[in-house]
Image (cartoon, rainbow, N blue to C red):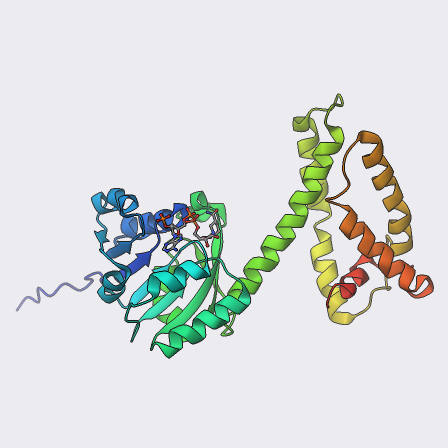
Length: 301
Ligand code: FVH
């Protein structure tokens, strides 16, 4: 007798709900739809859902209706306050709530407690990608997740559709903390690059000619990331130092005088130079021979 039972019938893809169809929410929605996930969406400004409806999304009339449609509920709104107001009145009992809205670690922890009190499992997410990097694995974009490990494990396949997923612990504040740490480092990097371009403005040096030199130099200086991690772990700021703090502080005068001569405000670089100087003047004998990593210890209040 022939067995006609399909041997490899595909596992149905998890249906999910997405609240928020801004630039990021819309990009996320398109990847789930393209992958074949049944998707229910809601957005405060309903017109933003029209294109997605044409692509197969079910459009809910309210956040409560959208939440009721599926167990997995993803939220990607402007800020934590908009998450609170959108979900106010929705029944979260038994739901798996994933918050991809950028927030502080404290907001992530408070939102986790808030969700738990309403009967939901919760994971917070920090998106390390711009909208065009979503659904483009080659871009290297990914999302930090923290909070309920069980939720993350249950929905990992769906969460990995828009971008890579990195779980960074059960403290629901840690996704935001990783996110903000990386964004803060990026801010300092952008500040330094901005200062460098300002220095050459009005000179016979084209930005496009400085550009590859900057990229190359910043790549070479990337060693500082690992160097800082090792020294902060060992608390050894003096062994094998190549460019010590006393020299760096002396050299900072050149940076400041050049900015002055070029008519450029030093506001983007002076806070870091000031920090190094404070570290040195606190105890020149003890800190002069240190790596600049030692100055990091001055920041914690
Ligand atoms: N776009 C980016 O490059 C970054 C990449 C890293 C992660 N961020 C964060 O993602 C969240 C959403 O960002 P977005 O790019 O989608 O932002 P917008 O295009 O401005 O859309 C905002 C959505 O939030 C809705 N909204 C705002 N206030 C409320 C509210 N009080 N109640 C309900 N919804 C609200 C807004 O609705 P509408 O204006 O269309 O009616 C949009 O859906 C964000 O945390 C980024 O930091 C993005």
